[in-house]
Amino acid sequence: MSQIPADPDAKMRLDAFSRLDELIRIHGSALPWRILSEGFRSASNQVLFATLVEGIFKPRQMSGILSIKTVVPKPGGKVWYEDQVFRDDQIASPDSIIRYSFKGTNPEDPKNRGLRDAMIRKMPLIYFYGVNPPGQKSLYHPLYPVYIVGWDPVSRSCEVAVGTTRKEDALWTGLSLDERKYGMVQAKYRLHQSLFRERVIEAYNGRCALTGLPSLKLVDAAHIIPDRDEDLGQPDVQNGICMTKIHHAAFDGNLIGIDPDYRIHVSKSLLDMHDGPMLEAGLKSLHGKTMTLPAHKALWPDRYRLDQRFSEFLRMH
Image (cartoon, rainbow, N blue to C red):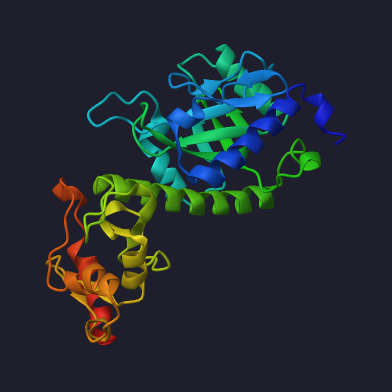
């Protein structure tokens, strides 16, 4: 713990991390803004994680910044910062850092100086990565601890690296290059999964494409081509279909197939099985039906990927 006293906000940072751990256990990795807006308790204080309008946030109870935030631009809306345009490209890149834009154009703005101070003091921060456009229904995937590891007044941006440890005596010691690389690999994987899931579910309005079931707690984002395929397995919406967890498992196991014309096929092994109403109504009755597609054609499943996946289904049956 010898490194911690240099940061007077250490206890609040640890309490913030602990509360995020709890929220993620309850709500999953993408947290609703309505939950985040409640903040967290530290001693007798109720402290905010962030605000909707600020990208770089310092709670009034703290001497240094606690969090940074990137949002998804609203369709047709104004893009204020370069990292809004290239944010997902950065997550897809092999870089071991994420570039984060300053507030405005003045490097000496107090918020930008707060980033520089966080770099000098090696302070662990929280990065709230927006999953969908900001608002009361928006979702954020928190990355923590993250560190400012570069601060450039010329490009008016800083470099953010993701930590690899949550041990208290190591949180204020900075990151080695290997730790940056490993931390970013882990963070990008988590972000890919989170962004893919939430955006696919949003495209289908939270409903299973096969049954119409509307429960968010019961649906998943199923990959058409698994993400281990480097060419076709990208976590984009056109490589996903919203399904209930049982249909997702059946699809992954090639017990259900979907052809390039969006028709559903149930394997002969299931069709020949007789085991009660769940099997009959929940799976067998889907055979020959057409899946429900997103309202926007640009979000429909990619026919080429479906063709590749359906060929695998046919080979197995």
